[in-house]
Length: 232
Image 1 (tube, rainbow, N blue to C red):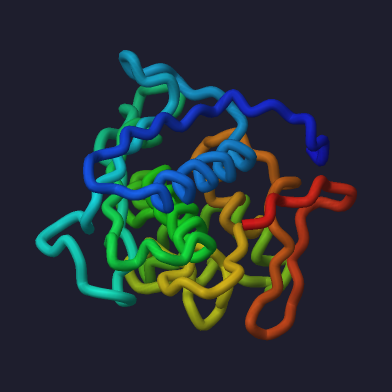
Image 2: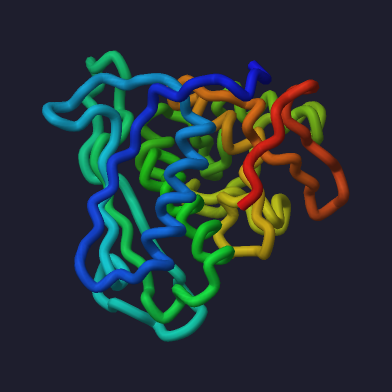
């Protein structure tokens, strides 16, 4: 609903590794707050983890800590997922994120990057989408809620265009949407992305999505009368 007083029962716990800086901590806190507006329902406890726990490390995940300024800004992904028989099947409960410390100077960029990376960690990633059979043979997205949002701007569409592999929205098609592969200034978290998390079984608040305009100029707004999404 559009009630800005909706209380989120969804909790993201962050563990910060060594060697990070204040910008990373500030950007991560803002990104956590953003996702706790979008995802509002409690999930099954996993041991001591209420809903979700992510570890943030200085340096990219994988072989190289940094590729210098620009290039890969950060990377992330789930680690442990709930079981198929869990009340919240397949949803991640632990994840990791690596930050290229050469790319932490711009707090707005870093905040938007961390929102993007948390999106991956929470399940907007090919492996998890595949667990739900939401990727077609071309790795485009066919989950019904996100598809219904896309059909508002592309009537009759049978799938939402994704980059090959199914881990990002198509860059050319979706431009400033936060879950495209390349960062754009003033990225927005649209109802398309909220729809993916609805499809994954999260309880979401579409009213907290950002207004969104496609590269072609088509507009896609949160529900009428909704509270404005947070500026990022």
